Image (cartoon, rainbow, N blue to C red):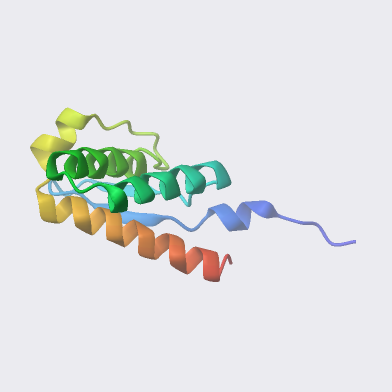
Length: 107
């Protein structure tokens, strides 16, 4: 019987270069994180209030960036100082595209 090496499935990460040129490698979401991400996405889509949308977008960005290989923990304050609105959306939509790609091709 051949050996099964599941570590090959965890090697693919999503690389994000922050405005300060720091590179963060974001992990693939686990099943639990994928469910949580789906819930955040639903909240974002249902919310009509701009302030609440921005709060959910910030929480989602924190959720994404804090799922990184180096276990760097970002705070809301750090993101608010570092990112503008376009960057929040770029992270959100970029990660969603990354998740879409890996779910269609898990290798």
